[in-house]
Length: 146
Image (cartoon, rainbow, N blue to C red; front, top):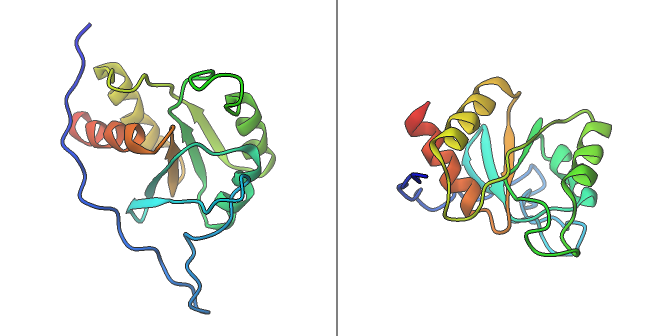
């Protein structure tokens, strides 16, 4: 199998300040830690692992779609399951896609599917994986093959 190589993105944009000067990207997620969303464009952001509890905050920030790039069980039984996050997203009316990618082993087919999802899912779109890096790399590859 042939794997793709990618160019790294520039550093993520600065968080957007709300009208009350609160940092919209420094909110508390389900684990009590801030959601560290890296906004790459006004229509796409990436994030590390989320839980079903984080989905309401993601929706509150205006995201319309979520793409999960992390394979179930990658971190063992403590990792939230795709089905749990998908159920929470759909309950809030968000679009959801599961496109699991093994770190460092992104294929052309996965990049093409990510490109298709980005073209067809309502934006803004948030993609997540363990740290956000693999989703970022997959996004960059999708831009190149799309």
